Length: 118
Ligand code: FAD
Image 1 (cartoon, rainbow, N blue to C red):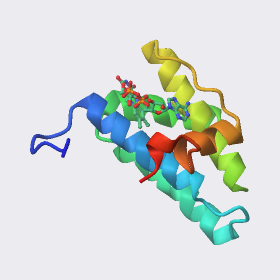
Image 2 (cartoon, helix red, strand yellow):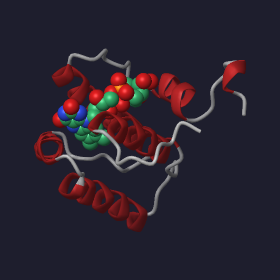
Image 3 (cartoon, rainbow, N blue to C red):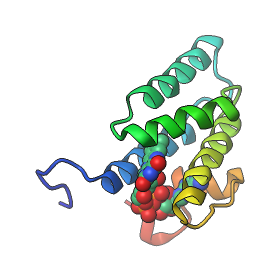
């Protein structure tokens, strides 16, 4: 296994967090109820308050204020999260990901690459 018994570094925490977040968006309902939308908004508000890297969390709170979370549909949430991740990518000089639902689903929901078959 690649899991070590040491506390995660900032980068390991980041990669693992993005895996959870993009996967949650990829499997969010196509037509969420009002209550599901509220819960997802609260989830990201809490994440931006408690993400365990203080300056990352502060910047993320700022970014969410500038581009409010979109929870009306699965596609809206996936694209919003992709754009938020790109804001961090730009800040760190990492490659920008193309935010279309087809590419996002290929990366985070169901891949056509045989190497990705479980
Ligand atoms: P990651 O950025 O972790 O990406 C993992 C994989 O996601 C990539 O290999 C790619 O396949 C895919 N991907 C990349 N971009 C997108 C996208 N836009 N949409 C969908 N999929 C994509 N680190 C800091 O040093 N400073 C910060 O301020 C900071 N803020 C962060 C805020 C949040 C909310 C999170 C979750 C993480 C933050 N990080 C921050 C960590 C940082 O984003 C990276 O996770 C870390 O630098 C490791 O990068 P990586 O190269 O493994 O790729």
